[in-house]
Image 1 (cartoon, rainbow over the protein chains, first blue to last red):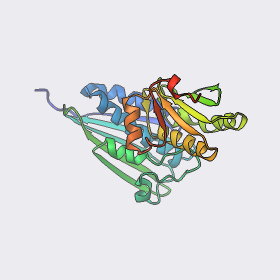
Image 2: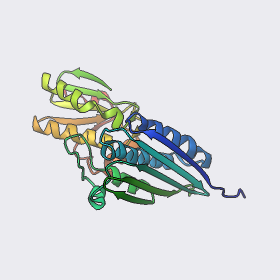
Image 3: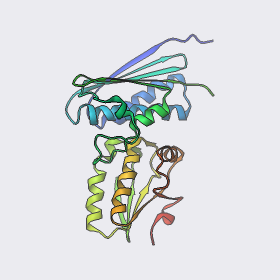
Image 4: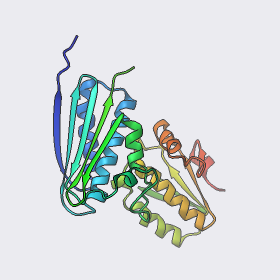
Length: 144
Length: 108
């Protein structure tokens, strides 16, 4: 039996849309250590993509700022955190409602939080207007 | 993102990774092509797409709404298992016509 050791990584990226694929690539490389299935990998990549896009599009609204992606692996649990210091979310419940979007003219589906919730087992959103947003997501992997 | 005009079809060849970044110019680019040409169908080619997030759903919905206005429709082809799953989860599979290949998807 291999002992479950906690591994942690932190990535700081600028709020630029080309960093969405960069964040996914780093997450993929890190997750390879726990040998997830293709589907588990896709689920986590999608959830990270949604959270990072939200920070860029809604948190910073095109302004400069940093996004911090933190990942922790412990046994079969994966924890992902995406933090920004953007404008924050006034009404978290409304933001999490499927099909709700604050930018209806811009080809946004309003499905971002819905996908995060569908693909991860736990999604916690903490936000303070004017201070920023922290999304914490957890998923158990390796249940084949 | 590559665009192709075939008869009354606007075919949009979607990239390998479909996210907010790769979709950012699509709305404007496709709008100008739709404004300048007589288009009855937007055909979305997912055959190269290996990753998609909710931006892909927004893209489909956006083109669907646009084509509804002008009496046209939206068709897709080449969607992989993951893309199909996201489309089903979003409840939009009835809004688009699904085909196996490009030949089938084109409006003749």
